[in-house]
Length: 387
Image 1 (tube, one colour):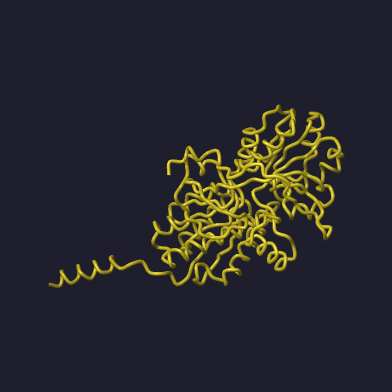
Image 2 (tube, rainbow, N blue to C red; image 1 turned 45 degrees about the vertical axis):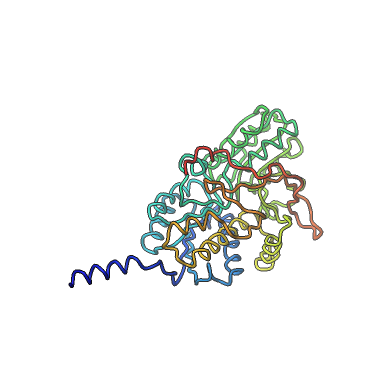
C-alpha cells in the first residue's frame, strides 16, 4: 500500500503542468571594452530601453540581467558562458558582438539547453549546416549587408574594387557575401588584424593598386580610425569608399564627422524607417541617451522584445523548452525594422537598404534611406539547414 501511494505521489508530481517562473534571468555577454566596446555598449543600451518599454519586466515577470564584458577575448567569453549557465542558471543568453566570441560561447550554452539570442553576429555555419533549434538571430547573416553592397557596386558599374576587412570568421563571411553579388574584378583583397587601429600599410597598398572604388568592413573603433586615415591621406578624393552600415553607423558618424558626408552604405535598418515601433524607439533612445541609435542598438532592442514576447506567450513557463522554442520562432513582437519573420534556420527574412550620409534639419550627420536593394531577402545558407 505504501509503495502504491509513493508511486501515485511521484506520478502526480511529474504530471503537474509547468509552472511560471518567479523571475527571468538573462545572461548578457558582450564586448564592452577595447575598440569594439562601443558596439556592445550600443546593444546594451538598446536592450535596456526595451526593458524600460516593457515596464522593467520580461513577459510580465521580474527580470535579472547579468551583464558581463567578454573583453573581445574568446577564452574570457567561454568562462563567462560557463558561469552564466552552470552557476547563475540563466534562462537566456544574448549580447554577443563578434563571431569569434559566438564560437566560444555557443557550445556551453547549447549544452545547457538554453536559448541563445544573437543581437549582432550571424555566423554562416549557424545559418547553414550547424543550424541549431536553440539559436535565434534578430540581426542578419554576416554576409547579408555585403551582399547588398556587392549588388550596388555591380549596378554602379565598378570593375576593379579594392576590399579590406578584419582577419576573423566574420570578416571572411562579409567578403564572401560581397563576392556573391559583385561581378567585377579586384584590385586587391586585404585582411587586417581584428582590433587594428593603424592602417598606414594598407592605405599604401590601396593607393598603389589604383582601384576604381573601395569596399571595406571595419566595425567600431577600427572603422573610425580607417575612415579618418583614409581621408587624411587624400584617398577620399581619388577612390569612392563604400561600406556596410556597420562601418557607417550613427556612433561612427559622430566620431568621424564631415569626412563621412555623402558616403554610401548598406543596412537592414535605419532611423527613418516609417513604422510606429521604430519612431518610438528612435525618439525614446535619443531622449534617454542623448544620442541617436545605431543598428547595434536597434538589434539589442529587438533581442529584448523577442525574449519578452516568447516569455509572455508561454505564460512564464520557460521550463517548457518545446513551447518556448515555438514561441521564439513565432516572434510575436513589433520590430523596429517593421515586419519580422524568421526563416526555418532562425535567421530573419528581411529588406536591405542603400543609405547615404547626409545632414538632417538639425545639422547632424545621419543616414538617409535612398533605395531598397533587396526585399524579403533570405540568407544564402538556409538550404543547408536540416532543421
